[in-house]
Image (tube, rainbow, N blue to C red; front, top):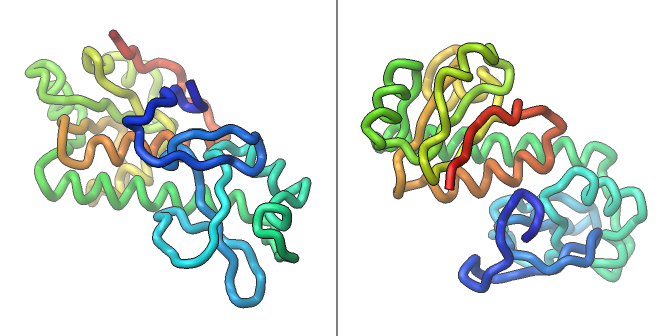
Length: 207
């Protein structure tokens, strides 16, 4: 089992080796990096840019090790320049991807926000993923439980969830199965590894 609870399985798709940990794992649990013409390293979080890429596990400790021990130069087999705030840039870009995916899910009718709507989806077993703001009230969040055999995301802020749902802030949200749910969960897991925050450990994942 790799970081974030993802099982190593061929069905998870292509695998790559992390230059910091030496572990081989599915690409969705890694961050791809490329270099520009000036030799500066920058993240390719969508893994779509051309050229040689190296991979680091979506984990703050692994990324800090890659930067601190100059492992990018070894990975690229060249002299490279690494921004000091590289980890922060990666976290911001992954967070933006999660917000954008949630926004798309909302527009397609596969995501709802607000306590009552989320509770209704949970009661009707329409929700596959329960999402709650990291900075929301613990007492309020404890009234809702993760769907049976579902997933829990609890490390986005109320402001970030608000951006996804076109509101100022959002504390409770839910995703239906199918659609963009799998991609949201994968990107959220990458964010969790990079974000030094407590998700409260409150989400009950059954099964």
